[in-house]
Figure 1 (cartoon, rainbow, N blue to C red):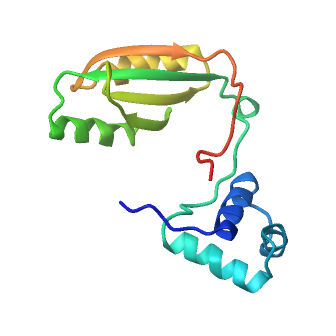
Figure 2 (figure 1 turned 45 degrees about the vertical axis):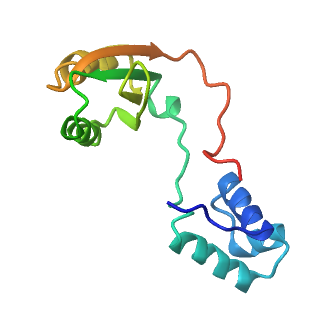
Length: 155
């Protein structure tokens, strides 16, 4: 893995796109202090380099009926490479799991889950998560309210 060599204009482009990925190239160029054609070339270069992975709409989960956000700390029975890969692959099949990280410490995985309600989340934990052949322990944390929501990286 390499650390990208970015100049001040690239960093400005990334900050602006992270704040508003829907702005036009002309708007982005103005904010970055360059003209539109080189701005578009820079954005494409950042995309091709994998620095910009994609563009997404941020949805209001409660407005869509998803009122519960929770985190699950999952410990596996065995931490072999095969078991870690198998569990990671299983998380991709679970719609309630929106993000998953392999972590160090007391747990092996941290799962960010979003569900319609507590019953749906409990059903997932009992019938799916703890029933997984690799899972030894599950600790859940229900959120109260989100107090900060930013892009994932400060460039």
